[in-house]
Amino acid sequence: MSPDEWCNDDSFHLQLFSSMNPMGRGFEGLEKVLEVIESLDPEVRPDKMWLMGPRLNYSRNELRRRLHEAYIVDTFSLMLVRSQQPEAMVEFTSRTNEAGVFCCITMDLQRFSFLREPGQAERRAAYLVSFVRAMASCLPLTFGVGHSATDLGLGTDPTVRDLSMPRPIYETFWLNVYGPATVQAIGRQHLLSTPSTLMEELPHGAVLWLTRPTPADFSSEEARLAQARSLVHLRPELSLDSALATLRRRSLEFVPVPMEFDPDVADILRMEADHQGVLGGKRTLVERFNRYHPPAVSEWLPASQAPEPDVDNIKAAIDTYEGLYAEQLVALFHTDVPQVMEGVLEALPHLDWHLWHANWGRRLSHEQRETLVPALGAFLGRFLVGGLGGRWVPRKKLEEAAVVIGDRAWLPFLRARHALQNQEAPLDYSCSQLFRTAQRIARAHSH
Image (tube, rainbow, N blue to C red; front, side, top):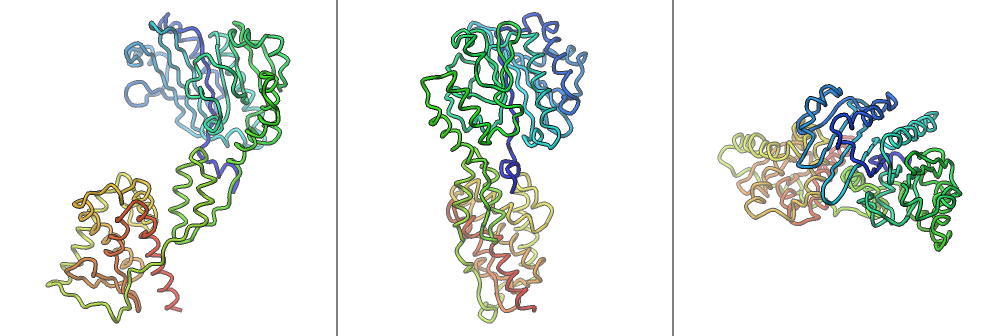
């Protein structure tokens, strides 16, 4: 697994803050900002705008006409997005009130792997730097950062969630912009002598500098050493060894761990690991999941011991299972688990993951559980019949109803009850595991 596959939800995050609100001059003040955004490289340039309603094709004339829709009380907020790959978003937010001026430009590029594409990394890094330069020419910048969004989230900076506030220097990143107040606090000459790949004075007294030529290798040993050296230069009271050790620990989170999951539940566990992502402790999670094995499937009987049907009308009972109960499950989950609409086998692990991840086994009332158990059991049974050639054996007591495949009678409704008994049960008693166990045994007997 490559680092980009391991951290497939990472994005590049650029955020710039200014001490001036150009909207004080209305649309005329905004136009210079729009010029900079429109000058972005065509491969990341937004072409849609998002105000209060649906996305619209971007044009200055249309934005001017609908400018009032971008205000919420005293805050102006404009989001420009790209409708093609790679996904790119540029957001401009500003307000002026008794608390002062807030002005922020944010750019997000999804996914981070876009900046690692062979032969393109330096060119793409260059136009990101050019974007910052151009923005600095029309707005006095007070602070800026450009880096991996995931690595930002793993950082030690307690103010990272509100970078607009005056702040000490806790960390250094790929791209750094310090405004006049920070430059003065550090000392301009001391700042300009910081170990860096690029150091450049901007208009209005700000300084732009890079730790590496591109953001592509932000978690490499070379990049971490560059980040640590620049931080210790700016904060001489800090230890290089300590700063570097902290960054190295963070880099470990980006090193893939092989996913050696139990094959019966591997796709469920992979969905959870990918959902939590590196910020959610993916490395530790994968190591724990590698040790996990669900209990052996116990919801079956030898076919010879399965009780005969005791319902008045076998066909009507089967129609109820497949036509009413199973369709109730589709109605309940078609939004959260759209795969259930398609009737494909992949629906089972997606459904298992949703039931587990959303804590259905814990949060159900008694009445809700008594509705969901028949729906889930019938949905599983339908796959045993349609996918493995099973035969329904209906019973008045649902937990006794079976699907006979070869010399075994599987009990899908009993499995459903077990799967909904507590928080971890949807994983421990997944529909996927029962189906795959039945599939293996059926295949073994057919050879």
